[in-house]
Length: 289
Picture 1 (cartoon, helix red, strand yellow):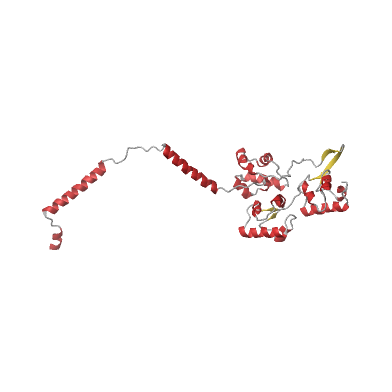
Picture 2 (picture 1 turned 30 degrees about the horizontal axis):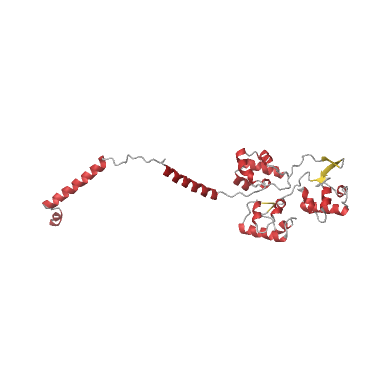
């Protein structure tokens, strides 16, 4: 008991110290409770320095957002896929309308026609149309199956080159049976002519003769070419395309192995040594799905 009592026995000086300590604690608590320490000073966030600083921050944020946005390269709108359309901001309905139109073997030849087919709104069209890249050879084609033109004071009936027979072609001065057969054979390799100027690719058929042929025959109805899925096609299938040789086929398959899956057919333009001038023709036979 004496042990505990010794801890609670204080002399007068100690008791005075304890009393003053309690007094200080109570005083500080009272001040904290009754005195308002909140500042009445209002910070003006509209000052020029703060506005300039905020503008710099917003500018840096916008730069970062622009960097994160996928960069859009010029492209042919005829080959927009589901994934590409989603990236551009098109709705599913708009993409489906485009794909339905293309499934009929038809081609879009102008910005106005693109909007007419897809029904995209003006604001979206204004954003994406500057990136549309139509081939140089794109021209408006008549919907009729035959066209009458005047040449050397006489009417000529222009027929569909994809329906022409050997005897039909021989009406052109300078086209004999062998040249006519060569045109038909090349048409078969292409699975049908898609562009008038593909006639210039026929072996040993000079420009003057092609010019004569095109006075009588043109592409009136596009062929229905079944495209190969580039992510599933075999080496032999890709090599069979007229515009792709063995070396280019190897490069395409090496690129496909590197990226695991090609998301958009436009990607093959990135392949080193790819013949950009042939892309529109190659794209007739390949699709990325």
